[in-house]
Image (cartoon, rainbow, N blue to C red; front, side, top):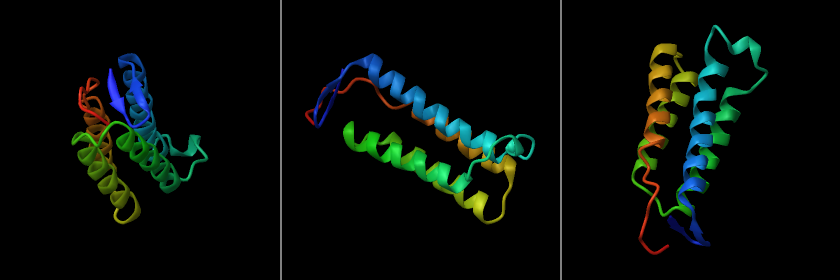
Length: 113
């Protein structure tokens, strides 16, 4: 169970939310990969902004876990890489690391909101 500013989330709710966020992060790979990007009519920058907004909302609800800073940093670097001097291998590593870090966010929190 995790406390948040409106009450509590059950462990399964938190786990499913983290999984959904992780899938959104991994989707960023598909839409930027030179081998699959043509299959999607998605604005990569807008997709990043969407993930960042969802991450920000999750972060504020669950009490600002430190792992979210790492996720946000990795995503910001991946976005800058995409916008400036695109190196897909670096982009891929940053996005995969961000997705992995999501799963490091604890699902149990006994602290007050």
